[in-house]
Length: 128
Image (cartoon, rainbow, N blue to C red; front, side):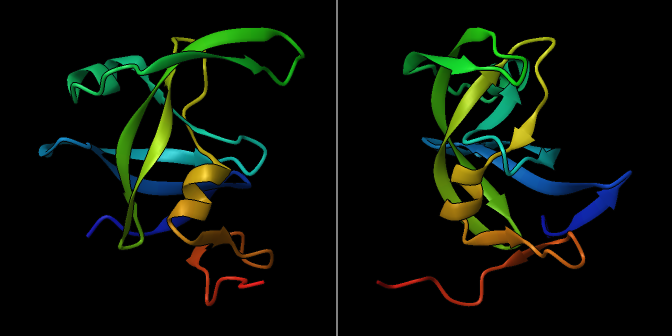
């Protein structure tokens, strides 16, 4: 179904399905760059608005170049490799990169295999 990841030019890409958390009939299929340096998942504002995902707050983020940017955030259901979870999503603006961030990876119990650089399910969670 909506599973899998691929390696494109040295980058891991994830095929995800994004849902409106209150109406799962509203969904979109996306290929997102897996970014283990990004805390949250960034998705284009147009996609989120089409799904009728509503902003719940406006947060400040530090960009890779050091700039501080403000973006709306909301919640969406993210599905990848057969796992599904409600996570925070950032409303990405025109020049922002769409990425699947660490918060979603952890919530979906997924990780990037260090050898193959493919996305995979975590075998077991740490329980300390």
